[in-house]
Length: 113
Image 1 (cartoon, one colour):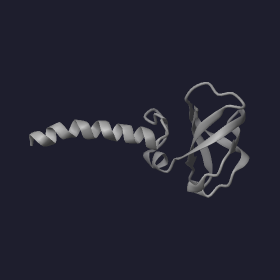
Image 2 (tube, one colour):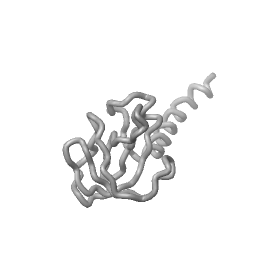
Image 3 (cartoon, one colour):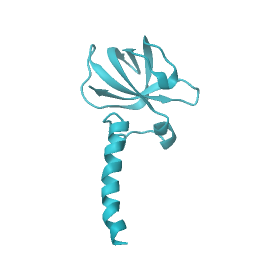
């Protein structure tokens, strides 16, 4: 029992570090998304070309998790999408893409690299 009590805090700290690595350093705790959306989220590195009202034009490399080749495209921003720092055109960022009920992906978070 004593071993278990000493091991639990170590496991909790390890899990936090693993989650941070798996989530590319993004803090997902304050994001206005369901657990199901968060579990299905895909992270991708991209360059911001332009950010407009509700849309971001980005250029990204291949995203194998969802079968996308490299491309430049407009992606919708989810309502309440998390901007995790200042982002300007030309900046390299990490995107968190969330698949909607319609099967389309939208940006749930943007974090500068």
